[in-house]
Amino acid sequence: MPKRHWSREEIEILCNEYPSSPTDLLVELLGKSQQAINSKATFLGLKKTPAMLSQIRHNATDSRRRMG
Image 1 (cartoon, rainbow, N blue to C red):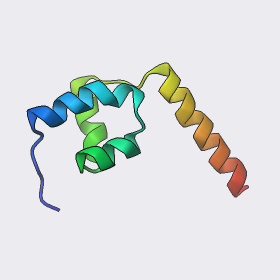
Image 2: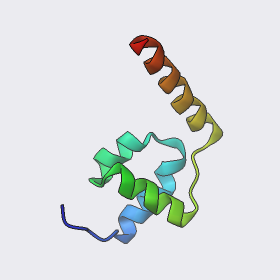
Image 3: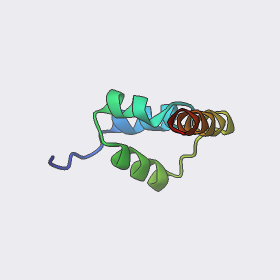
């Protein structure tokens, strides 16, 4: 897949949505890989909200319980 630069609109969406949205949703919304989204968010200094981090941890724990 060729590299595609980030448009201003995509960066604006990322800045507005990254903190409180699941990254999987942003993958679909922006048409970029999870790695690209996480890299750009890190570059921009974006962080997930505490509530989103809690939800991510909760979902990971539930997944492990179902697998175990």
